[in-house]
Length: 236
Image 1 (cartoon, rainbow, N blue to C red):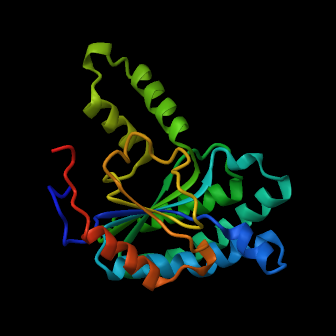
Image 2: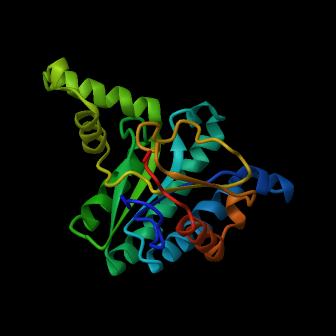
């Protein structure tokens, strides 16, 4: 992590993409059209802009552990859209040198999508220029519970557990790299909704009123510029 003020770009940008449904409803369209616009059209362009800025790692929170409470039809549509999104990512990831990795639970994801995620992870393994975490069926509380279960399963003694050890298990369980330096949330919602609760303590939080389907590369560049003007003290 950078020691203080940063004229450098963040190493890790995480995006909470909110506003797909509102975007569709504002236009009299089915909700799934907002999800298609956001994930299949906009998200690849945003991360292309991120890689062009030299950012090492990106995370997109695609689907939370709470999103299963949505209607069965919306969840079904989302899983199909996520499949199309991941298929679209593989070729440019191989070309640019981006490793694709899943963040969250795999056991509840439909088998077809799960197989596609595993294929994307396998085909891009060894790519080291960038890392793209696909947070799908991810929740911050669930992440902590699974890390603690792994600690117990490994028979780690209570006195051996500290912040660094827990952080190690969080990273190992999720296969992700650095803590996010910058978290961007769209659509005017001013909260993290449980995103990376133990790993976002020193993240810079950038909130924009723009709905996710209306985001573009220039919007991401503005967020990065805002970050570069922040004075990051890390408690000092």
